Image (cartoon, rainbow, N blue to C red; front, side):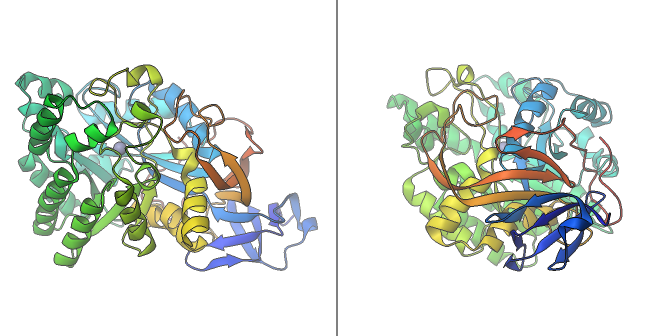
Length: 482
Ligand SMILES: [Zn+2]
């Protein structure tokens, strides 16, 4: 047999090209042929995609496996919800300190532990972005790059935790000293050095919110007795994002460190990010937004279920972010998935844990709210969810492409299928969703990982077979077995 699997009669959305009425021949987990001449008799197995669209498997490049729950268990349930939504690779953030593994120490010891906890528990392929929290961690960047980590993270607002009334509180949280702009400068300096001569883009992702402003705005809101998500947005206002983006931009321009501005949540944050990108020409800055900032506002009926950092904003902010997506200012759309159970959300605003899941809705939301509602072309959907994150994070073109030699990672979608989101019909372990009641048109019906169907018609097939993606992935090298 020429092929292990053939995907016939579908409309293939080739990133950078657009929808094409072509067939795919798959062999050894890779795409071996695209064209009109593939016949059913040439393949062991045929997937009839008549009436369906074949898109590249999504790469959810902002994820938080294990932040609130045991790592292996969280990997299993949340990567299952990822493949249910056509996601075939995810890149999860990890740091030492409170949450996650609740410990600090060298990544030389902790990273192998993280990989051991991951092995055998992922339904999709996976990789990690790492946050260097201490000066010693900055010294481990080269070692981490050798382990397949080419993206790092800094949290601008953690400095605020050290400024809280109880100054030991912050230290307990980050388990580190001097987590400030000085640390950020050293981090950017080290990453820029690592970038020289590197085969791939080595970058720093930034959570941009300014802690000093959050401190005073939060006190104001608390004094006024604010309780809902609008109060939460006022306590961490867009101004705090904008100031923090400016600070990051100045340092990135000075050090020439490539950066990723994460989860832009407001029109003001987007305008500031676009502005610094224009101002500092030659600096490498990628812009990200999330499903929830595009789709939900602080008036969401589910209330505290939707508490997240940065907060949900106004309907005008949603429109501004969509405008940025349509104009091509935004490079990636992600879920920022963090499985956070209802019990952790508490009854009150301030003690509720931030974050929630959404990975399963990446394709449904971009197809329904993007393509159907706003005319976002399908090839742009494929760029935002697959090709762009693959290029930014060292996975392209083995991932994020539909081309001869690429992994056969596919999301096969029925653009007409209409479904209303409920916590019960999502496949995450999370027992609530702020997306409850949203009716979306355009859902994946099957997900293929390296040529194997891992999800079809609402149920998983086989066992978790996700591999650790040691980045950068070479064209010749297969994904490394996890
Ligand atoms: Zn996040």
